[in-house]
Length: 436
Image (tube, rainbow, N blue to C red; front, top):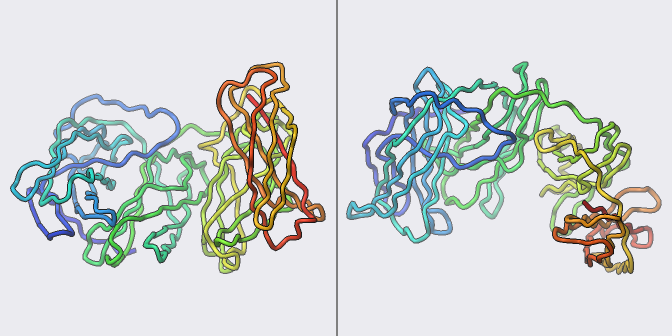
């Protein structure tokens, strides 16, 4: 991977009209990333303020006319810094401030020698800026033990609409479980400027030692005329308490097809083979015949309180032609899964009406709270199975929230778009209703 030299930009203003503006001061803000659990920080003493530096910064107008500031910050100290309060000021052509805001950055800390990207999106009312600056207001120390993760080969795919997708896998070979607090990627131009940055849209937030996980980033809105030279991925990690594995089994058979819109579907069933009630989230990694990664997907299991011995349908979706997908790997996302103390209640449906059509099936009716409890959540799930193979062919569900007293009815209307290559006469429908 190509590396570029990044020198400190300090009190320097470079103006390229209508396209690019460089920063003229030091320090920065990161976009927020979410991660499980609380972060224990030790803001024991204020740092001097010169520990962090902006090493690269640009501002540009996106395809929607809005101004976006991108930058990289680095930690030159021999200790972790974090919890930075900064002032961001953008100036117009006459030197006056057109935007001024206090921002908070480095919520997960910045270890010695680390770099992290950030971006700030200005209001659409700001139509032009000539330069901008960051002023450090408060900067504190933080305690954090970083876990070094290994990045596999990532593939960059550009679509006709300008969206760029970055796909790959990361592995934890460090011997310690890792919490992934933040994962961001940056696209660089041939002249070393930042084109765009993005947080991961599919990624685990916890990785056991010796395990791997898929990761994907989506970039959009940037000027498509910019030529992408390379990318960099930036992870913010720390040691984590070990999360125990869950006992599940991905059942056979599975059904894979591509719909008329070019979307790949993988449908199957997962069984809870353990002794705990589980609320599960899944990750899927999809490969072509050469073993190259062509898609990453995530989904929550529809049944959020899966009893021991119980199965639940699932559906994974990626945007890739079927002939590109030759194999896949499914795993439980431990960072978004949990053990549940109490089970959901089995409910019934009445007046079920099934209307098969050429490109969709409509399944409607009323779910009834025939339990002995008032409920606040009701899951209604409908699906189709091939009677000859037992394969799950289509799936649709809705989660209704509100007040559902004993005896109340919840109307539903679910649409399923199955594989149109199959004979509708070979398909059977089912409805599952659960409440909490």
